[in-house]
Image 1 (cartoon, one colour):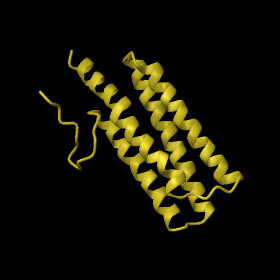
Image 2 (image 1 turned 180 degrees about the vertical axis):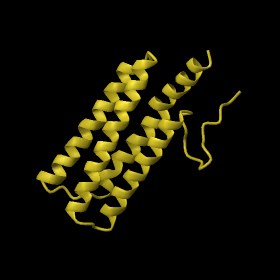
Image 3 (image 1 turned 90 degrees about the horizontal axis):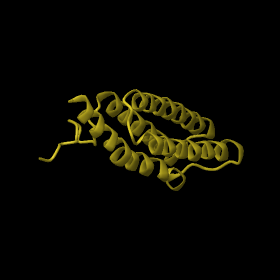
Length: 137
């Protein structure tokens, strides 16, 4: 039997309410940053939005990893490496924006939405399915 993994808004769900809520907020933050870059908001505004996204992402990853540790998720090590990779890319983007004057545009920001979608649809979905299965035992 196929499992319906979409929520009432039609967005991908991993089946864990707190994670789904965070994923929606993260997607909204990425969209807000993208919109600000497209209309040419000043560097202070886009820098603030980048730092806000980085802080939220770091907090979300800590929550996920805490849950994974508490539930002894067998895929935690690889999942954590993926988190570290994104935070490294995000840190580099912030540094280039702040220090080297990188202009944010759809090209420089494209990886964020792609990474977020791929991570939720793959890594987080596997964890959500595993967590829901373990919780039903």
